[in-house]
Length: 230
Length: 282
Image (cartoon, rainbow over all chains, first blue to last red; front, side, top):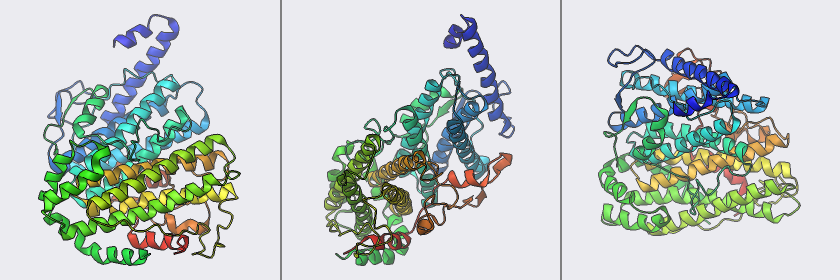
């Protein structure tokens, strides 16, 4: 919380900090509220702590996707609950859509996985200033681009064709989000050379690479060591 | 130009695809682990040699992969030619920012064409020949329902959105065919999400110009264009995924619009064939 601590130095910053702290509570509650009781995890009541194994095989890949969707849904839930300063109505409407898509993805995976689902995660958004459009959109861009690369990279690890098609149904929506967010930040960057290579291919990442990027935003430690790698 | 022979060949092969690929998954696993270490720029050339290694020669499954790749190549030809002609029509695209967007998109389609041609050759196949297109949708008459495609920006954008959204659906529809395909599947997925980025960007342009209230994502089965495009979007209104109703799922307030938008839907080769047919002259 070093960054948050710096916010408290001035009254204006304190207001932002309190605003953030309050929202952080919302995020935790939202996550905790949508999961079943987790008796086998020790924690502070807001969610499990410690290390969570994603599991093996196709179920492990689906849990990996579920973890990412939890993160995205929690993020946009906070964004929409108390939007950044001077947000225009169209942006708020679009971000609300995205929140609903991510919640739909999260709840879909939770339901599909049933008892095999990992528990609800507690997000860590201390690096995000939710009062700032630039901070929120930069984080959204990060999440969406990571999401696209994660599904693209995990596709070849899926054995069941039906699961692969489902992942395909979701990844293109994430790509639509990414293009929208990117154009909000800088028009024309919906598919720029930071994500598309000279073969016209979008980025793909292995689950291990994705987990390194996602981990700072998650309180628990995600263990992907049992996931398929080929 | 035996495009339709190609399509029917894929159709007749479709039922066997899963079984064939299933039998070859172990071989393809080796392919995947090796391919993971190869730079993407080297992929088209690596694919051929790795398939050789995995199969010990051109196996029947390779021909299935080749027909899928040639199917994809045909769609990329369609898009590449469309944007090329649009960008050549200097008075068509009024805004420089819009022009730059289409330069970006055209560049990707051109790269996809080159990538797929290279991949097909690497597998020992022959890239399907470039068709002659009729972007008016007149099957070669040059006087189809979109006769003003290169003089009326709104018509051009209508078709751009339809081509991109349909491209997304076409790639998605073939993903399951490529299960176990390792780096080749990954490349197809990488193209698939680029097409989705394009679709989102084109939809944003149409909204900004007040040509449509369409969002960057697809709401229900609504084309956001006109009824002429209903077939391109049929099935997108699906609200049930893997037997799970997405509307109000687990007590969350997810309405039908959001439930449909959250999942894009695949299209079969037959459906794509029917949609593309009016745009092919020969």
